[in-house]
Amino acid sequence: MDLRAIPAQPSPGLIHVVVEVPAGGRNKYEYLPAPGLMALDRVLHPSVQYPFDYGFVPNTMAEDGSPLDAMVVMEEPTFPGCMILSRPIGLLEVIDQQRYDAKLLCVPANDPHLDRMSNLGQLSAQQLEDIAEFFRTHRGMDGRMTEIQGWLEGQPVMDHINRCITAAAAPELPQPQEPDKTESDH
Image 1 (cartoon, one colour):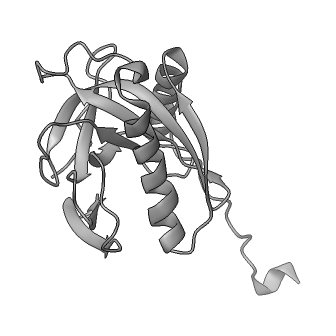
Image 2 (tube, rainbow, N blue to C red):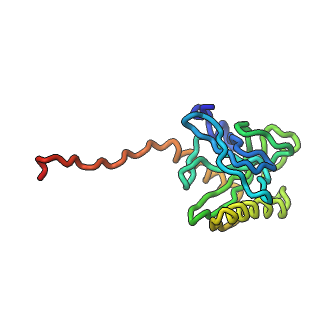
Image 3 (spheres, one colour):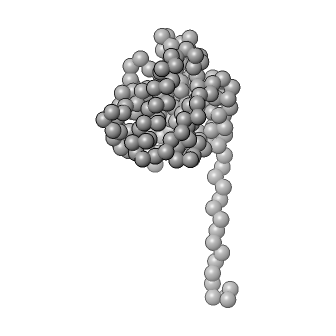
């Protein structure tokens, strides 16, 4: 599964999300780009499960150096590796181990039951708190310090997505070379 040719944002207001963990799952899969496979990363504590399909936006780079994390509100879970054309509706700002690690919240573009959902106010406050609590709890069980800063929506969400797309497209800077230490240098 080579994701390099898949645009992060195929058209304005829509993004692709590749699912790593279906809703209700405890197995945390991670996409490995080199072999193009999903691999089991870890199994979560029995009392914790993903509230929605969870994955990433291909061809983006978030502040933590990995693709932008994303969740998709689905009525039925999908499967690891499934690509969902999605409409972003919010962004959960998370500080994980003192690093910014935002989580995008989306709805599928092709679900007629959710086609009118366009902002966080259309989800219940309890659903939003359940998502935040999931990240607090499952990270805490790993002994990691996690701070939930709150939700963003509207233009700040699109600005964040665009920064992550730009970061992934930026050429990598060459690593500094060690000077050649030869006998003639002494």
